[in-house]
Length: 214
Picture 1 (cartoon, rainbow, N blue to C red):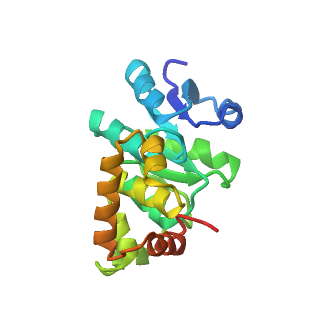
Picture 2 (cartoon, one colour):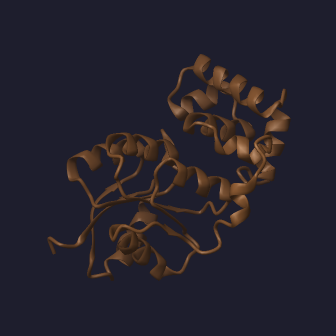
Picture 3 (spheres, rainbow, N blue to C red):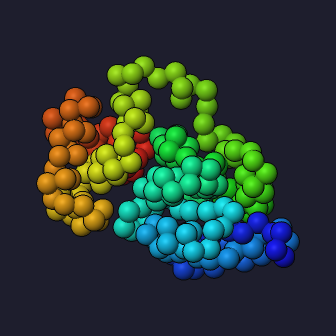
């Protein structure tokens, strides 16, 4: 048992975590040693349990999945993180990988994929679910909105996403645990980088990229 792959499972839905834990229990090589329901708790549990791999969702309250990845990588640049998310849009996959995730799979993948991805990453390989990315993603012109969004900081991306969903500045501040002025400054920066003076245009870009779905 001591040689098994130790996993920290991070998802804000208790029932979902229970299902994944049962799924991983079928693999004799994997042990779920801790569970977290948000990024803040995940960071604390990582420091106290030192798992081999962190398996996390992106859509969580508080700092969210992307910011959690960034903070964990700051603490350990070699950390093994597998994203397990409903999001299958390239903009999410690219962001997660660019900030340090070692793998990305979707919750609609075959049940065996989760264990397969964990074992592959533990063996030093990256694991991207088939079909999530294509070669054209690295050939976007610099002024393309998707290319610009890919270069956003984690906080810029989160503010952009929530703004496009219709969140007010105050609500974004509450959601991300940031100050009102900080969020307002992020929105100004985002509009400038994208060349979009209105929130309607931001929403259109986010919808086109699949970040917001109507």
